[in-house]
Image 1 (cartoon, helix red, strand yellow):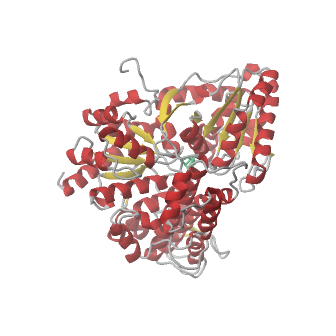
Image 2 (image 1 turned 135 degrees about the horizontal axis):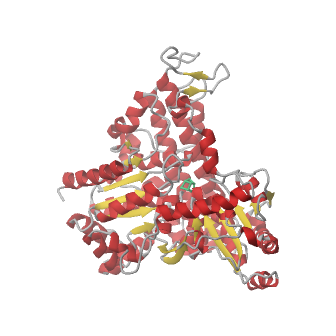
Image 3 (image 1 turned 90 degrees about the vertical axis):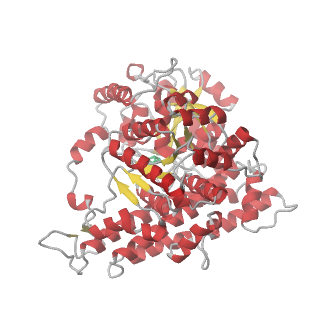
Length: 631
Ligand code: MSK
């Protein structure tokens, strides 16, 4: 405890979960904690990536006695193909999310459901893409940009438009190594083509395409998602919010939004704040309406509107187990199919909204940008009308929450830094004050911590303990996704958390008036982080790989996370994982990922299960980079 401020511990969070699981047991609910036990030990062939089922002659599994598949493919080919397909799955997922955002941008209208909220940003991007902006109607410009962005997915020639944001040196590496992403969909198609029976089985070729597919995500589809979401919903700026299950309110109708695409959650928030809806909730016996979120859709509305975050990935069942959730409304990705049967044990409505994520035991209310307002109204009304069906004897909301400051887009970080030195050099601001802090050693460096929860790692423990260790060593954190929510739940996004930092970082937090852990958004917003790294490199004259900066995903679980890892590494940022990416079965593939690719892109992966060691390794790498720079 420091000055009356304490962090919430993982033990306290676990005790709260335990209490909720007791409610679950009373109503016969299933839980991931039980299913993990049923699923372990996991299949060793699967874990090491050595099972091939891409044709129907198999499945082939590699052992000492059977070193090759029926087609003759060796373990390196099998592991490499599996890895590439895993990456392609993630790249497709993020990029399709970005495509949906571009389609929504096509539908913006001054009197429509979706509007242009940040015209300056739209104009900035248009100028980057050499589009005439002078005297243009902003909606006409938005439609042209949406069309151009959609063409990025399938253009027959050229490479991603976004690559020009990177420093020249990085762009040269991408060209030299042939990992510049072409059309976004093409890199996914090429990955699927290469891994079809009878195509590539050479580890180097498969890993090179893995990097390229990842690049089509971070420097392609995800960047479309982030940038045009900002244009429509507003570029995030610092905003205060709260995190953990205690943000749900026993007196109010609770609507929990979950998934990734802000198009739905923005509308739900809009209508739940409408006076007619609040009056209706009162009529139904509630005091009001509380919208909170889970996973990245939560990050989106927290960053832009200060909507509280109920929890992260492995807490999604907990929101239903409170017995106080009238509706859990989901869009796409990271949604447990378990929510359907679980909701049936309570009064909760499990509402799916996207043709991409349809699940049994859910109520499907199809959401699209043309009818978004009507859909959102229908969903909010359904939640309100469900309030009367609560079973009071099952209601228990753990009284646990922390204050959090969020909304640190690249633009907001630049604005905060400008505030310290009045150093603004252009409309985008400058990274110079941050660079000066790193040069002088006041800040030793930075870690970009991202990714999910995974039952293979004690949930949230790795995120929170690593963050505490890094902060104490004067290393600032930029975070996103479920890692960000872990930090917020612990209290590390409260500005008072500066007390847990080393003297240098504490001073920086005071001067810039920021918390030591900066929430940069959702999973697609890791594209903000590579832009930030690019800006730092350009403003400092360092190469990205020279910056005392590393990436970390200690509890990752999804295909998207590996796709992210690949574009972060391909951008020149060493990346530290706490979970193996199903590649250990091949020393060639494993060796490339953990070392060989450094010759291509100046960065590589490290995997370490011991969290203490993982933290030490990141600190050592940051110090190594400082020494190499002579700072
Ligand atoms: S939501 S991909 S569990 S970070 Fe983006 Fe969290 Fe991982 Fe999903």
